[in-house]
Length: 437
Image (tube, rainbow, N blue to C red; front, side, top):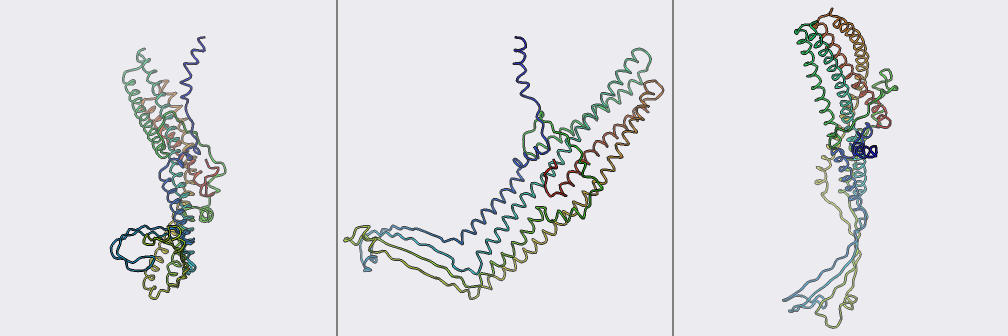
């Protein structure tokens, strides 16, 4: 019975178990909640709606209309066309449609432009998500790095606390002086400060990551560690090859290319205004006037029905004076779009070159930092052994420990910088995030 009661008492605690989030799950939350990405999605939806609006102009415009009026004073009888001076009501109904028969390609080119702008917006939407994913990945790696630094600071603090306890026992036994205890306590205070700083950095990194995903911070959430990518090494990275592949696949480049190409069709649609256009209009109409007492409402509508078919030709005489400035503006906008494309290519090339260089640098720094930790760790073990034996000064001990702590921090940061750069370079190689997380 006691075990059953204990189990029920522990159930609420079991329900509050820590949640582990992987980098891939964080990216899913980013796509769902990040407002900057949502803005790109809305822009893509607006471009889609604009395209549908443009295409709707090509379709026949069908309408039905009805009018009701009350007439008084001198007017013309709609039924007999005679002058009358009386109060009467008038009602008319009509239906018809309008169809653009020939527009010199204006509407077709507008539709092509709209299609390219829609595709550009869709590519830009992906580009926005990719940019936010890179920032998210940097934040994720920063959380892992600051956590590792915090764990190292905790270990340093625990080691100093052990030394303080040991020296305190020696002082109590009369085998060590208070000056030694004061010095070792100073080292403990310094390690405590470093531990508090590391904790603050860790909490700040977690908060930034939660804010990037636009979710409420939760202290119970833990983040899964990252493993090295064996297939991404400095020897396998070539900036020129990566750029040649990325320039054909990256959504930033595709979006800029599609946007530039859309202005060609804008120019064509504007120039089409200089050519004749042909429209077809049809109309069927009937009316009722209260002045005719011989026919009721429906019989009068039947007696007054009439229709027409109109083929209208519009020939612009001085249209080029109006369209020439618009064409010049569109051509300037096309050159601006080309410049935007050139900038996108330049930024992508420079980002890949920097990523390749950083991978090589970080690989060397990581290897050197690991070697430094190993050598300083061995040196500290010797100094600590001498200090415990009383043949080494507190100055040598604290200096050796500080060097080791600094080397450990450098190695931890170099490790996670290298892991981040490996994934970033794999993204540039693939053009997408599949299999990277």
